[in-house]
Length: 608
Image (cartoon, rainbow, N blue to C red; front, top):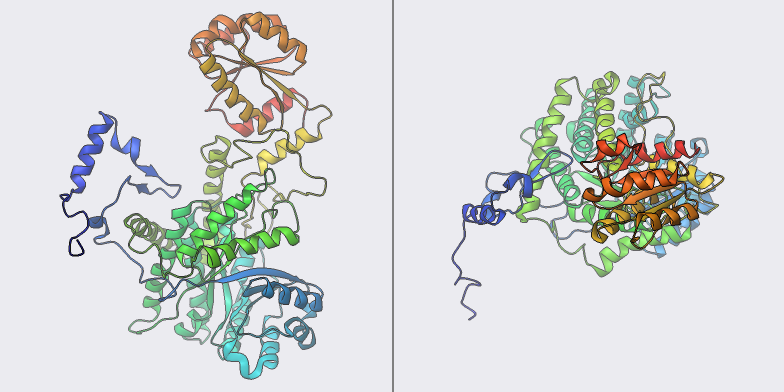
């Protein structure tokens, strides 16, 4: 038995035989329409893959780690009181983090004394250190040199300078662009003696948090990286020196396999780019990737679902081969954070590492026919957009002309539409809501300022981060603040299967706005249902029945209610024209736009 090959008694089955069998089982239904999945990025994903599907595709040469899949667990620390920030960093190290992001609120406070307070008792071999400050980056490097001295080779992390990212999100810089690149070149030269310290952070997560898809995020991030390379080489640095100081930061969204493929494709494409800058060189600086769970799909309502979202996102980033990871606290959409959310976010990574052993296998998705093909598709589509951007003048030129902003806004608008039409689901917000949930008094929802397409008088049109749930949440918050909570009476009548199914749909639909839902058993007669609806005093009565029965029961119910409530039909029956002629003009169905429809009913009920 030991010498027998597993399953050798079964004959091999070709891909054509699989396809023929599936087509036979479909009984004439279209194979592509039924089983081929189209992603947000426009990929056609097949229902099955086989070994031969790996022939001729781009495949990454393993992950960043050849022998394992270790990553740094990062949490950010706001630095206002330098001593307090030091105590927080030491405490977090005891609780499992090995990477800290020091967010320095006041750059003018950067000096050696304060930096010594911040880093007292911290061994650079035990903690990756990252610093984000709106200035004084060179001074931070000088302080690190003085503080660590002979330990400089052990220093790991990044001085997160990103003038292009700041220009993109703010619309302007505090100094002219050329001087900004001059400063960046000097900063890069300052860090050359520190092999483990990078000083440029390409913030690709800005695109993801503005609503872009993974292809757009990756293509524009690579273009931004090339812009930095080009500008630094012009200022006397070699391509190898410049590339070795660039770190990428990507947002990790909810599309599990897509996000794995994105990070794997990123390494392929960045290596191809570096080959053009460094032809003939046998070794090139590895791509350094930090991942952050995206704020785009975090929600105010049902916030504990955010834990599930970020856990899946974290798994994608780790399997994809990220070098470090930040999980945003589950309450990031409405709170400045606290001990409990921070502990959960930290422990989510500890579970992946210490209990699920995600760090033990290098490039764990390697060889998966599906993920390898997805990686190849991601790489090809990204490369096309990257080349288009470069042909149009490169990142900076496209940012100034608005090409990048228009692309992101277009994708963001499409995704918002998909969410409002419930093609893309936010559990607990756009589907399966708890209508009785209320925002806690201390919760302050964070909404983006201005509209996503707002034009402002700045040198560059800013790319603003936002959340997908914002419009639905604003509708619901308006309902919470209303003098009287709206009520929806479900008048279930006729065929019990259709009646209850449409009642369930209606409860979920109006529940997204926090309306009180009055559910009922199926009424025996329209008169019974009308009487109960009148007694409830509900402002909206939704008739829930089968398409065939609406024409028989709905007009009578409408006349009996006599304008005491807004009458709505759950569904889109063929008799809609006949019902409209009888005065019933309100319908909801799976085709209804959630935000547009709920805003309409809010206006009817006098809720702004």
